[in-house]
Image (tube, rainbow, N blue to C red):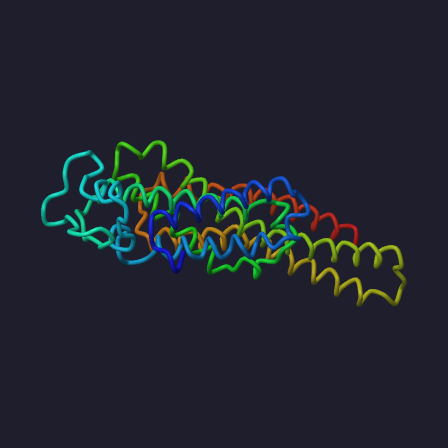
Length: 283
């Protein structure tokens, strides 16, 4: 997409992402073996870059065909664009009206569909469980969250598309938070499993001279518990930073986007209970 800023290029990219989505679902646990994450990352980076660009879509992507040119001369309502915003030649960018044109709305829809598809693939448990957060990139997840939030705001300005377009974008925003939380919980679970094994060995092989080892493991468990308790708040802060940056102030919208924090908090509560049981056994 970097070299082809046309609607056709964006449609071709969307088709490629959809194909990767289907292949990833079919591949199941083998999805990580054919480089799906690398390909999805490239697509997501390109889409996010356009959606977060300071310039409007109607300036970044120019109409090429006669049909696209015609759409660029119409408002989303079907009314003609005021004369000032009309492009004069095929392939030339236009400033367009503040509400956009039928063409820019079509291009935005393609980009938003690609964004949702790419985020959905990265969120597949089969793909995510075999990767570390660094393989996806926290910055890319944060940018994808912002792109989804910005797109939600864009579609909310158009009553004709709001109800149908908003739901997948909200799901994409929630998925970004869910993916970030899953990576954090994945690391926490691995650490807890290691501590559990150490604790069990220490309890079974306990001797009068092993009290220092028991104390060390208990301290590590307590530290792990403290880290777990901080996790839900850290997820909320991470998400609220994107909400604030995109100017999302509505309480209801913020609550919707932040809803995955509750699921993460439930897992944290489960793991904290496991830590308490281990600590009791090591008394």
